[in-house]
Image (tube, rainbow, N blue to C red; front, side, top):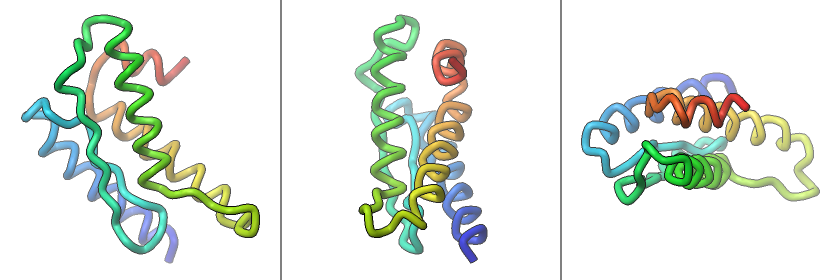
Length: 110
């Protein structure tokens, strides 16, 4: 069941990014790790992605958006920690890949 929800979430992510990138006003739409989809829009219209500082700022925004979208777990929910962390990592990777910026991809890979 969790894999089905995760698959739905990343399909929603891909569709959101496909719609967002041509407008150049948003970088990605990320979804939550629970059953409810919680889209997160990350804007980069104000950034110059040809400069390192702009790429670093976008990457920070994407990381924060992935964490927010996938949620956090309390100390009482350690059984959910791994899936939440994996959700955020996958959402970040998908968002970086969908943007297609070489510097952003290199930063994510480092």
